[in-house]
Image (cartoon, rainbow, N blue to C red; front, top):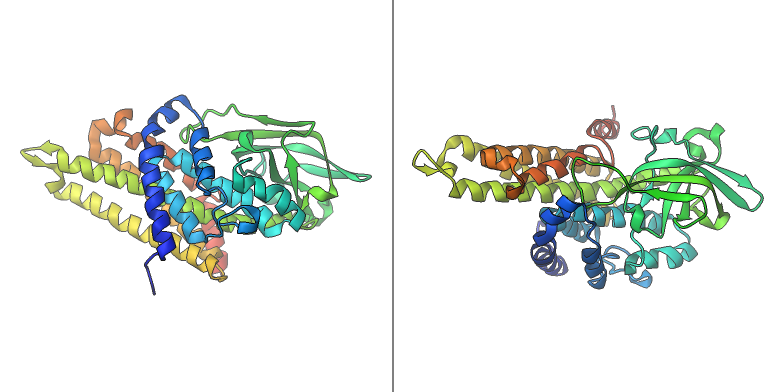
Length: 379
Protein backbone atom coordinates (compact mmCIF):
# COMPACT_ATOMS: atom_id res chain seq x y z
CA UNK A 1 0.00 0.00 0.00
CA UNK A 2 1.16 3.51 -0.79
CA UNK A 3 -0.86 6.35 0.66
CA UNK A 4 1.35 9.10 -0.74
CA UNK A 5 0.31 11.33 -3.61
CA UNK A 6 2.57 11.30 -6.64
CA UNK A 7 4.74 14.35 -7.21
CA UNK A 8 2.24 15.66 -9.77
CA UNK A 9 -0.65 15.13 -7.36
CA UNK A 10 1.24 16.90 -4.58
CA UNK A 11 1.83 19.90 -6.84
CA UNK A 12 -1.82 19.94 -7.86
CA UNK A 13 -2.91 19.69 -4.22
CA UNK A 14 -0.73 22.65 -3.22
CA UNK A 15 -1.96 24.72 -6.14
CA UNK A 16 -5.67 24.02 -5.69
CA UNK A 17 -5.51 24.52 -1.91
CA UNK A 18 -3.99 27.97 -2.41
CA UNK A 19 -6.56 28.72 -5.11
CA UNK A 20 -9.40 27.59 -2.84
CA UNK A 21 -8.17 29.67 0.11
CA UNK A 22 -7.27 32.80 -1.83
CA UNK A 23 -9.84 32.88 -4.65
CA UNK A 24 -12.82 30.66 -3.78
CA UNK A 25 -13.29 31.05 -0.03
CA UNK A 26 -13.32 34.87 0.33
CA UNK A 27 -16.57 35.32 -1.62
CA UNK A 28 -18.35 32.13 -0.60
CA UNK A 29 -20.68 33.72 1.95
CA UNK A 30 -21.60 36.58 -0.39
CA UNK A 31 -22.31 34.20 -3.27
CA UNK A 32 -24.44 32.03 -0.98
CA UNK A 33 -26.41 35.02 0.28
CA UNK A 34 -27.03 36.50 -3.16
CA UNK A 35 -27.30 33.17 -5.00
CA UNK A 36 -24.59 34.27 -7.43
CA UNK A 37 -23.04 31.63 -9.66
CA UNK A 38 -19.20 31.52 -9.52
CA UNK A 39 -18.70 32.49 -13.17
CA UNK A 40 -15.35 34.21 -12.65
CA UNK A 41 -13.99 31.29 -10.64
CA UNK A 42 -14.90 28.80 -13.36
CA UNK A 43 -13.21 31.04 -15.93
CA UNK A 44 -10.05 31.13 -13.82
CA UNK A 45 -10.16 27.34 -13.48
CA UNK A 46 -10.45 27.05 -17.25
CA UNK A 47 -7.32 29.19 -17.59
CA UNK A 48 -5.55 26.79 -15.20
CA UNK A 49 -6.60 23.85 -17.40
CA UNK A 50 -8.66 22.37 -14.59
CA UNK A 51 -11.95 22.07 -16.49
CA UNK A 52 -10.52 19.26 -18.59
CA UNK A 53 -8.39 17.80 -15.81
CA UNK A 54 -9.00 14.03 -16.27
CA UNK A 55 -9.59 14.07 -20.02
CA UNK A 56 -6.99 13.33 -22.74
CA UNK A 57 -4.73 16.11 -23.94
CA UNK A 58 -5.84 15.66 -27.55
CA UNK A 59 -9.23 17.10 -26.55
CA UNK A 60 -7.75 19.97 -24.58
CA UNK A 61 -7.64 18.15 -21.25
CA UNK A 62 -4.76 17.70 -18.83
CA UNK A 63 -4.59 13.91 -18.94
CA UNK A 64 -4.72 13.61 -15.15
CA UNK A 65 -6.27 10.78 -13.13
CA UNK A 66 -9.34 10.34 -10.95
CA UNK A 67 -7.35 10.84 -7.75
CA UNK A 68 -6.39 14.30 -9.04
CA UNK A 69 -10.05 15.02 -9.77
CA UNK A 70 -10.95 14.03 -6.19
CA UNK A 71 -8.21 16.31 -4.82
CA UNK A 72 -9.63 19.30 -6.67
CA UNK A 73 -13.26 18.60 -5.68
CA UNK A 74 -12.34 18.15 -2.01
CA UNK A 75 -10.37 21.39 -1.80
CA UNK A 76 -12.96 23.44 -3.68
CA UNK A 77 -15.74 22.05 -1.49
CA UNK A 78 -13.78 22.83 1.67
CA UNK A 79 -13.89 26.48 0.60
CA UNK A 80 -17.29 26.58 -1.12
CA UNK A 81 -19.49 23.56 -1.71
CA UNK A 82 -21.42 25.30 -4.48
CA UNK A 83 -18.19 25.69 -6.43
CA UNK A 84 -17.28 22.09 -5.63
CA UNK A 85 -20.51 20.65 -6.99
CA UNK A 86 -20.35 22.89 -10.06
CA UNK A 87 -16.91 21.52 -10.88
CA UNK A 88 -17.72 17.92 -9.98
CA UNK A 89 -20.84 17.88 -12.15
CA UNK A 90 -18.98 19.53 -15.02
CA UNK A 91 -16.40 16.74 -15.05
CA UNK A 92 -18.21 13.61 -13.90
CA UNK A 93 -21.68 14.20 -15.35
CA UNK A 94 -20.99 16.57 -18.22
CA UNK A 95 -17.68 15.46 -19.65
CA UNK A 96 -17.37 11.83 -18.58
CA UNK A 97 -20.28 10.40 -20.64
CA UNK A 98 -18.97 12.05 -23.81
CA UNK A 99 -15.45 10.84 -23.07
CA UNK A 100 -16.61 7.30 -22.27
CA UNK A 101 -19.26 6.75 -24.92
CA UNK A 102 -18.92 9.47 -27.55
CA UNK A 103 -17.64 8.94 -31.07
CA UNK A 104 -14.40 10.58 -32.12
CA UNK A 105 -16.39 13.27 -33.92
CA UNK A 106 -18.49 13.92 -30.80
CA UNK A 107 -15.40 14.19 -28.62
CA UNK A 108 -13.85 16.69 -31.01
CA UNK A 109 -17.05 18.70 -31.21
CA UNK A 110 -18.18 18.61 -27.59
CA UNK A 111 -15.50 17.37 -25.19
CA UNK A 112 -12.98 19.95 -26.41
CA UNK A 113 -15.45 22.74 -25.63
CA UNK A 114 -15.92 21.42 -22.11
CA UNK A 115 -12.18 21.21 -21.52
CA UNK A 116 -11.61 24.80 -22.60
CA UNK A 117 -14.53 26.14 -20.60
CA UNK A 118 -16.47 27.31 -23.63
CA UNK A 119 -19.36 25.35 -22.13
CA UNK A 120 -19.96 23.89 -18.70
CA UNK A 121 -20.94 20.25 -18.46
CA UNK A 122 -24.40 19.04 -17.45
CA UNK A 123 -26.36 15.79 -17.62
CA UNK A 124 -30.15 15.39 -17.97
CA UNK A 125 -31.28 12.28 -16.11
CA UNK A 126 -33.67 13.04 -13.24
CA UNK A 127 -37.33 13.68 -14.00
CA UNK A 128 -40.32 14.70 -11.83
CA UNK A 129 -41.43 11.05 -11.71
CA UNK A 130 -38.09 9.33 -12.31
CA UNK A 131 -35.54 10.04 -9.61
CA UNK A 132 -34.26 6.98 -7.80
CA UNK A 133 -36.28 4.96 -10.31
CA UNK A 134 -34.33 6.34 -13.27
CA UNK A 135 -35.58 3.45 -15.35
CA UNK A 136 -38.98 5.12 -15.21
CA UNK A 137 -37.86 7.83 -17.64
CA UNK A 138 -40.82 9.39 -19.44
CA UNK A 139 -39.04 11.78 -21.79
CA UNK A 140 -39.52 10.33 -25.26
CA UNK A 141 -37.60 10.41 -28.53
CA UNK A 142 -39.65 9.47 -31.59
CA UNK A 143 -37.98 8.94 -34.95
CA UNK A 144 -39.48 10.91 -37.81
CA UNK A 145 -37.55 10.37 -41.02
CA UNK A 146 -33.95 11.45 -40.44
CA UNK A 147 -34.70 13.26 -37.19
CA UNK A 148 -35.63 12.40 -33.62
CA UNK A 149 -38.34 14.43 -31.87
CA UNK A 150 -37.80 14.80 -28.12
CA UNK A 151 -40.57 15.65 -25.66
CA UNK A 152 -40.46 15.67 -21.88
CA UNK A 153 -39.02 17.34 -18.81
CA UNK A 154 -36.02 16.98 -16.53
CA UNK A 155 -35.53 18.39 -13.03
CA UNK A 156 -32.73 19.16 -10.56
CA UNK A 157 -30.16 19.48 -13.37
CA UNK A 158 -26.85 21.07 -12.36
CA UNK A 159 -25.11 23.68 -14.57
CA UNK A 160 -27.63 23.63 -17.44
CA UNK A 161 -27.95 27.43 -17.58
CA UNK A 162 -24.25 27.59 -18.44
CA UNK A 163 -24.16 24.59 -20.80
CA UNK A 164 -24.27 25.02 -24.55
CA UNK A 165 -25.20 21.32 -24.86
CA UNK A 166 -25.80 18.36 -22.58
CA UNK A 167 -26.40 14.63 -22.67
CA UNK A 168 -29.87 13.52 -21.61
CA UNK A 169 -31.86 10.31 -21.61
CA UNK A 170 -35.07 9.56 -23.49
CA UNK A 171 -37.18 6.50 -24.22
CA UNK A 172 -36.74 5.35 -27.84
CA UNK A 173 -38.14 1.82 -27.54
CA UNK A 174 -40.74 1.64 -24.76
CA UNK A 175 -41.39 -2.07 -25.14
CA UNK A 176 -37.75 -2.84 -24.25
CA UNK A 177 -37.89 -1.34 -20.75
CA UNK A 178 -34.54 -0.01 -19.55
CA UNK A 179 -32.97 -1.38 -22.75
CA UNK A 180 -35.11 1.09 -24.65
CA UNK A 181 -33.54 4.22 -23.11
CA UNK A 182 -31.11 6.14 -25.32
CA UNK A 183 -28.80 9.07 -24.53
CA UNK A 184 -28.70 12.11 -26.81
CA UNK A 185 -26.39 15.12 -26.89
CA UNK A 186 -28.75 18.07 -27.26
CA UNK A 187 -27.83 21.73 -27.87
CA UNK A 188 -29.47 23.90 -25.23
CA UNK A 189 -30.33 26.54 -27.83
CA UNK A 190 -32.30 24.06 -29.98
CA UNK A 191 -35.85 25.23 -30.81
CA UNK A 192 -38.24 23.93 -28.17
CA UNK A 193 -35.52 23.48 -25.51
CA UNK A 194 -36.11 25.61 -22.39
CA UNK A 195 -33.90 25.87 -19.30
CA UNK A 196 -35.74 27.16 -16.21
CA UNK A 197 -33.73 28.41 -13.22
CA UNK A 198 -36.16 29.26 -10.42
CA UNK A 199 -35.65 26.69 -7.66
CA UNK A 200 -35.59 27.89 -4.05
CA UNK A 201 -33.14 25.54 -2.34
CA UNK A 202 -32.09 24.69 1.21
CA UNK A 203 -28.40 24.98 0.39
CA UNK A 204 -25.81 25.21 -2.38
CA UNK A 205 -27.33 28.58 -3.22
CA UNK A 206 -24.65 29.65 -5.68
CA UNK A 207 -24.77 26.48 -7.73
CA UNK A 208 -27.05 26.36 -10.76
CA UNK A 209 -29.97 23.91 -10.46
CA UNK A 210 -32.54 23.91 -13.25
CA UNK A 211 -35.51 22.34 -14.92
CA UNK A 212 -35.38 21.35 -18.58
CA UNK A 213 -38.41 21.35 -20.84
CA UNK A 214 -38.27 19.68 -24.26
CA UNK A 215 -41.12 20.53 -26.61
CA UNK A 216 -40.72 19.04 -30.07
CA UNK A 217 -36.93 19.32 -29.94
CA UNK A 218 -35.38 17.86 -33.06
CA UNK A 219 -31.97 16.18 -33.35
CA UNK A 220 -30.37 13.70 -35.73
CA UNK A 221 -28.70 10.31 -35.41
CA UNK A 222 -25.41 12.18 -35.02
CA UNK A 223 -26.64 13.35 -31.63
CA UNK A 224 -27.09 9.83 -30.23
CA UNK A 225 -24.45 9.23 -27.56
CA UNK A 226 -23.07 5.74 -27.93
CA UNK A 227 -25.60 3.23 -29.18
CA UNK A 228 -29.38 3.29 -29.29
CA UNK A 229 -30.88 1.56 -26.26
CA UNK A 230 -27.72 1.78 -24.12
CA UNK A 231 -28.54 5.02 -22.30
CA UNK A 232 -29.53 3.28 -19.06
CA UNK A 233 -26.30 1.29 -18.91
CA UNK A 234 -24.30 4.41 -19.75
CA UNK A 235 -25.70 6.52 -16.94
CA UNK A 236 -25.16 3.75 -14.38
CA UNK A 237 -21.47 3.76 -15.34
CA UNK A 238 -21.45 7.56 -15.30
CA UNK A 239 -22.92 7.67 -11.79
CA UNK A 240 -20.22 5.33 -10.47
CA UNK A 241 -17.63 7.95 -11.32
CA UNK A 242 -19.85 10.79 -10.16
CA UNK A 243 -20.15 9.23 -6.72
CA UNK A 244 -16.40 9.59 -6.25
CA UNK A 245 -16.87 13.31 -6.87
CA UNK A 246 -19.74 13.59 -4.39
CA UNK A 247 -17.71 11.62 -1.84
CA UNK A 248 -14.79 14.02 -2.27
CA UNK A 249 -17.17 16.95 -1.94
CA UNK A 250 -18.52 15.51 1.32
CA UNK A 251 -15.01 15.11 2.70
CA UNK A 252 -14.24 18.74 1.86
CA UNK A 253 -17.36 20.02 3.62
CA UNK A 254 -16.72 17.82 6.66
CA UNK A 255 -13.10 18.99 6.82
CA UNK A 256 -14.19 22.62 6.77
CA UNK A 257 -16.70 22.00 9.56
CA UNK A 258 -14.10 20.20 11.65
CA UNK A 259 -11.48 22.92 11.10
CA UNK A 260 -13.88 25.65 12.18
CA UNK A 261 -15.15 23.69 15.18
CA UNK A 262 -11.63 22.88 16.41
CA UNK A 263 -10.50 26.49 16.05
CA UNK A 264 -13.58 27.76 17.88
CA UNK A 265 -13.22 25.17 20.66
CA UNK A 266 -9.65 26.26 21.32
CA UNK A 267 -10.64 29.94 21.52
CA UNK A 268 -13.97 29.80 23.33
CA UNK A 269 -13.76 29.71 27.11
CA UNK A 270 -16.33 28.49 29.62
CA UNK A 271 -16.01 27.78 33.32
CA UNK A 272 -12.50 29.19 33.29
CA UNK A 273 -10.95 27.21 30.41
CA UNK A 274 -11.12 26.59 26.67
CA UNK A 275 -14.04 24.34 25.82
CA UNK A 276 -11.60 22.08 23.93
CA UNK A 277 -10.47 20.92 27.40
CA UNK A 278 -13.88 19.41 28.16
CA UNK A 279 -14.24 15.74 27.35
CA UNK A 280 -17.69 16.22 25.82
CA UNK A 281 -16.21 18.54 23.20
CA UNK A 282 -13.06 16.45 22.76
CA UNK A 283 -15.11 13.37 21.95
CA UNK A 284 -17.11 15.23 19.31
CA UNK A 285 -13.90 16.48 17.66
CA UNK A 286 -12.23 13.07 17.93
CA UNK A 287 -15.18 11.42 16.20
CA UNK A 288 -15.15 14.05 13.47
CA UNK A 289 -11.41 13.61 12.85
CA UNK A 290 -11.75 9.83 12.73
CA UNK A 291 -14.75 9.82 10.40
CA UNK A 292 -13.19 12.32 8.00
CA UNK A 293 -10.01 10.29 7.78
CA UNK A 294 -11.91 7.09 7.06
CA UNK A 295 -14.14 8.77 4.49
CA UNK A 296 -11.16 10.31 2.70
CA UNK A 297 -9.40 6.94 2.55
CA UNK A 298 -12.50 5.35 1.01
CA UNK A 299 -12.90 8.11 -1.57
CA UNK A 300 -9.29 7.87 -2.67
CA UNK A 301 -9.41 4.08 -2.73
CA UNK A 302 -12.39 4.18 -5.09
CA UNK A 303 -10.54 6.72 -7.26
CA UNK A 304 -7.41 4.56 -7.27
CA UNK A 305 -9.39 1.49 -8.30
CA UNK A 306 -10.95 3.42 -11.18
CA UNK A 307 -7.55 4.71 -12.30
CA UNK A 308 -6.17 1.18 -12.30
CA UNK A 309 -9.00 -0.26 -14.39
CA UNK A 310 -10.38 -2.29 -11.50
CA UNK A 311 -14.08 -2.69 -10.57
CA UNK A 312 -15.08 0.19 -8.32
CA UNK A 313 -18.90 0.27 -8.26
CA UNK A 314 -19.11 -1.06 -4.69
CA UNK A 315 -16.30 1.13 -3.40
CA UNK A 316 -17.68 4.27 -5.04
CA UNK A 317 -21.09 3.59 -3.48
CA UNK A 318 -19.51 3.00 -0.07
CA UNK A 319 -17.40 6.16 -0.36
CA UNK A 320 -20.33 8.34 -1.35
CA UNK A 321 -22.68 6.85 1.24
CA UNK A 322 -20.27 7.03 4.17
CA UNK A 323 -18.76 10.40 3.29
CA UNK A 324 -22.14 12.07 2.79
CA UNK A 325 -23.43 10.76 6.10
CA UNK A 326 -20.34 11.81 8.04
CA UNK A 327 -20.52 15.24 6.39
CA UNK A 328 -23.99 15.64 7.87
CA UNK A 329 -22.74 14.40 11.24
CA UNK A 330 -19.69 16.69 11.20
CA UNK A 331 -21.64 19.81 10.25
CA UNK A 332 -24.27 18.98 12.88
CA UNK A 333 -21.66 18.69 15.61
CA UNK A 334 -19.80 21.77 14.38
CA UNK A 335 -22.96 23.81 14.98
CA UNK A 336 -23.36 22.18 18.40
CA UNK A 337 -19.79 23.05 19.40
CA UNK A 338 -20.35 26.65 18.32
CA UNK A 339 -23.57 26.78 20.32
CA UNK A 340 -25.77 29.77 19.52
CA UNK A 341 -23.10 31.25 17.28
CA UNK A 342 -23.24 28.17 15.09
CA UNK A 343 -26.80 29.08 14.20
CA UNK A 344 -25.64 32.43 12.82
CA UNK A 345 -24.42 33.03 9.27
CA UNK A 346 -21.28 34.79 10.44
CA UNK A 347 -19.63 31.59 11.64
CA UNK A 348 -20.27 29.72 8.36
CA UNK A 349 -20.98 26.30 9.84
CA UNK A 350 -24.71 26.77 9.20
CA UNK A 351 -23.90 27.15 5.48
CA UNK A 352 -21.87 23.95 5.59
CA UNK A 353 -24.78 22.17 7.28
CA UNK A 354 -27.25 23.33 4.62
CA UNK A 355 -24.88 22.46 1.78
CA UNK A 356 -24.14 18.99 3.14
CA UNK A 357 -27.78 17.93 3.14
CA UNK A 358 -27.95 17.41 -0.63
CA UNK A 359 -25.16 14.85 -0.54
CA UNK A 360 -27.39 12.15 0.95
CA UNK A 361 -29.80 12.65 -1.96
CA UNK A 362 -27.95 13.54 -5.18
CA UNK A 363 -26.35 10.92 -7.44
CA UNK A 364 -27.98 8.11 -5.51
CA UNK A 365 -29.82 8.48 -2.21
CA UNK A 366 -28.41 6.75 0.84
CA UNK A 367 -31.18 4.17 0.49
CA UNK A 368 -30.35 3.44 -3.15
CA UNK A 369 -26.65 3.21 -2.36
CA UNK A 370 -27.33 0.61 0.31
CA UNK A 371 -29.21 -1.34 -2.35
CA UNK A 372 -26.23 -1.02 -4.72
CA UNK A 373 -23.85 -2.26 -2.02
CA UNK A 374 -26.22 -5.12 -1.13
CA UNK A 375 -26.22 -6.29 -4.76
CA UNK A 376 -22.46 -5.99 -4.95
CA UNK A 377 -21.94 -8.19 -1.90
CA UNK A 378 -24.24 -10.86 -3.29
CA UNK A 379 -27.56 -10.33 -1.52
